[in-house]
Length: 639
Image 1 (tube, rainbow, N blue to C red):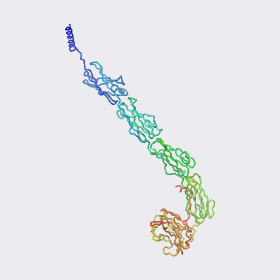
Image 2 (image 1 turned 180 degrees about the vertical axis):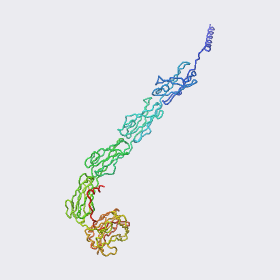
Image 3 (image 1 turned 90 degrees about the vertical axis):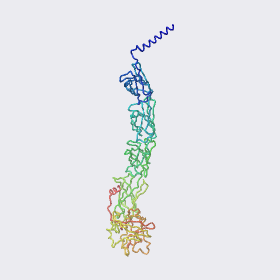
């Protein structure tokens, strides 16, 4: 029984083998195979090459279906090739799929490639993973200073392929983030700028408000995984120092303006505000400064009463005001000083000397009063009189005051000061603001004689009025005498320079008749007049002498009058010296004068090389000149 069964089974197997090899009419075909280039793809910048191998295919193209965890509908990708091998590149997007080329993905997406094989029939699949690329956000510096340059922001994001990317920017002081759009520079690379401002008044989509010491934070969020953010940080500091200063070291007067300047490189606004306080007004005023060439400036006036718009009340005689400016970027105010001080009242007369009963014109400048008049005191030394004279402000220049006063022989009047022959008259002003009493002096003479000119182009015309006058310039003990063309006072060309040689006694002078003369001339007609001479030099002091041919039994009684005490200054500038002839009458007999002027370099102070220049030497006053009007004198002073 067993043998029969085995035979039957053997015959069946042989038959089956025969049928499978000899009786089939349709081939099975070659099973298609899908190959992916990368089993893990990173970022949208990458692509994956899809390859299909199927020897059964003879067409030029074949389609495969691509799906992902983010897009289960998927796309059809067309592969091209020949001889059974077909290829194409597959792209990726985190936004959406694109038919025929790009599949939408999300983090760790599983991507499936499906090929529907005809022979043998069935779906052939291959899978791989897509993951997000590495993100980065960066600033071009770790710290920034001032508002002159922008911060450059760079984002690297291989997961997006759009033309722009957005970051959020904020600072410590202004912590509400605002978006800044970056522009694509290459695939996955984005760049943009953010600017700085310290003024909250400026608003812009690319401008960040900052203060000194702020930290700047730039945040970029991953579009694939929104919970993932990249951060870049940097610091910002203000530019210092900021200068707050006045336009000049100090100011005076109520009619001009004081200037305040601020240089602040942290701001670009058209104007800024400073606060100004003074001793008189500690509350102070706000001032708006306008910008010009990077410097903010304003001009402010001064008032002795109250502050106002662009006017600050000041306290004479000296007020140091405080300028306070708060830069928006710096919490601590920056200060500067503005100094106002009252100038000394200056008094000017229309002449240095007067004769007879002409009027003396007086002008005074007072920069720290708003009154229409001021009062000066006019006093005489010999007569001992003092009278008040009211000076009135000039309309065009209200800080200049003018008036006049006359001279009265011996007894004062309301408009004339009492004087005596060869008097000295003082004009003074009591300044209650400054607490001083400025003044000047002039000479007054009762007689007017023709000039007796000794030396100088300006006086020689009157020299012949003295019979027998023959002045000769002599040098004693070696003084050198040099003529100085075009070096004289008042434009004359007759000046002479005398230089000391350093002997035990150096001197020179104008003597009647020269060396050896034995007879002087009668000068009694000039007893009430004065000697005038212009001096310029560096001689420490000079003695001036008028003397007889024979000085008498005791030459030690000669009278030497100090030039320093009579108007000369050893500063190498021209100064007029005026000395009454009466100063020598105690030792000189005017009926027989030989030394019309003797000069010596005074011991013990003079040294070799000291010099003095001399011009316009004469006795008595020149002819009276016309008195300028108040208007002309004020105009002269205003210059």
